[in-house]
Image 1 (cartoon, rainbow, N blue to C red):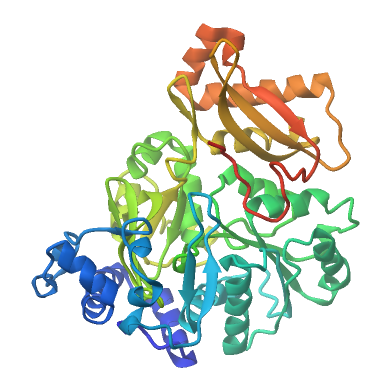
Image 2: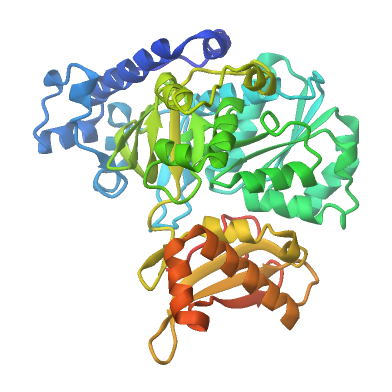
Length: 503
């Protein structure tokens, strides 16, 4: 296959290249590798061979990256569901060691994705970088607490296996425990295991990590006595959220010790936040005019991540993220369903330089501690279908999530919610927000009013159309708030991805 063999020597070489190679090297890899993957898949994957034939594509005429960008897109709906699994796989068979994981089914019937050892090994590269970039520089031992679900979903198993590979290869003294979504077991580990380690890394979905932070005091866990780091995946979050977990978790370094991974069941961990990407994102938030140049047509704050072209390549077409990467089922120009865009390192640096944001200034270099990788960037925000409408305007979860971090209301709300548009008896639209209360909390009328005021204020600040709508409709534009007990199974079943929007 058109890829790198998963062994220790190659891993060390890739880690060295990430630290030393410049943009022109990675830009070449970004164009050459998917082209090789395309030609090999066109020859060896029966489904893809048939797909190209039906779309009248002659692989011999695809000679460079520009040609490659004219190849029709694939997707779960238009490609993966059209062929038997073995026909989608290399050489038309599944006669190899395989692990299956499932999508969440949030956008339809779950799909079972096969993966081999290579995908876990790919992930181990970024995990080793994260381990070695710790601001504590303790050299271990390090305790990894995996708080992803350990069922049919990809997060738990690939994280366990990725860390295990990274630890064995690097010689870093790491220990792993996999309590999954069992909070009591996580708190047991924090109380009884963490004191034996110089660092502890908690891994999980961002809302679940927030639960652990918020409930730690009640569980008699003192984060001031633990050198804590966080690794998350599955959804974007704001820099206000990062600041929240940094402050509440007594994290040492915002840029080095809190990392979010952009991944999917389709092909594993695809891109990840680096100190470089986090630093850039935090600068852009301070400069709205530059933010709009880097992230055009976006109201929300996208995840900004870097990726390794040895494993995957991203393109953007009509603001849709397109990926090409190798797996048991290779994905070629695959529309994963997310929206965003791409930059090589120089492209983004030039925009920043022209707006007086210098990533290689003395201040930046000091904050980044020299951890500047010239890998390409992908920025991604929630699917366009993961929003709801109110009188024609889009309401995105990020705006509500941000409001619920306000300390005025976070003392009685967890920050989780499910929202959707409803109609009253007169068929007037209104926004309903179902909000989760903290454990053993009951809502008072005064607290309900506080919550509504904070949410409405943020909606007015972030959405000019809502401000006009509220000025015109007054009370009719106010969201209806419904409060639910902690972990109520209707909207807040613990440990699974939070469904922020219900259609």
